[in-house]
Image: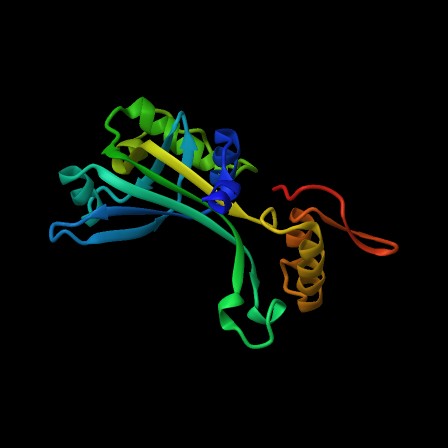
Length: 210
């Protein structure tokens, strides 16, 4: 329980910031046979809800019409830590540094064209921040033609593991091995771990942050 507490994201603002930095979320609904159906979706978190656009027909829409209870998940894998970082033979020592958010909520189809236009504009702002498009208005035909799924969270839980569960000595050792492994994400991960490169080598300069 103590470790789980240290991994929890307690700031709602941090959770929302993380959500809107990610490109893909996964919505899980229950189909007619009682099986979970998980679909990757573009999304935006706005006005205390998750909004997704969709084709106006499809299984996921049928699912949420019959059962509005859904799950929604977003995750970002920062760095895989090979088992040999900690043990020469024990495969169970492999680990991953990550950030994730899991939402349980109530889904519905947005019918109000003003809310639909707002959601579509928020989606465009997120995915095309450079502009180059005409802002959508409630009276545009495209607003009528697409479906907008809205998920109002009942619970939101965020977790992150970027080294805050390690003591400073262990963090330095792991950071050095991450840099030696030299993955494309290595430098950014080490920075998030609060480990900086100095002229004398590596040092822990601050607590892990993202």
